[in-house]
Image (cartoon, rainbow, N blue to C red; front, side):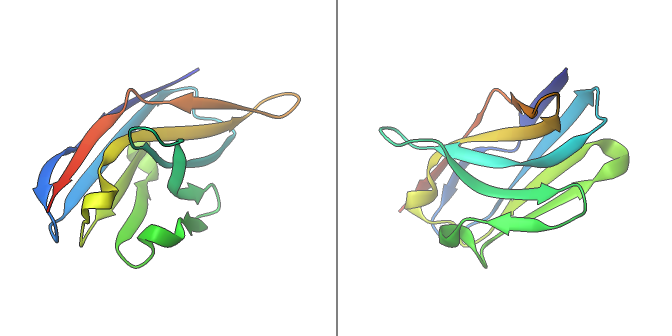
Length: 119
């Protein structure tokens, strides 16, 4: 089992920045990836960014060049630095961990943190 606790959401004006943090605890062996998804009202949950166990990062096209994902392995924490925020970035942001399990993998989710960008 993996437990995830997010922090750092809030209200910001367009063009501003926020930094999300997600602290993971529990069984951290065989982690395939850690990352962030978001879900806006009426929309499906979508990948924002993730970082694989080897350090490779992946970003949604809509956030490339504005958002940056990083991790502190010693603290089992993943961060999402969000710059040049736009109103369309408004959503609930969820921390996600993909952990290897037989026969495939398990997904773990945080409780979500609200990010609201005003125009």
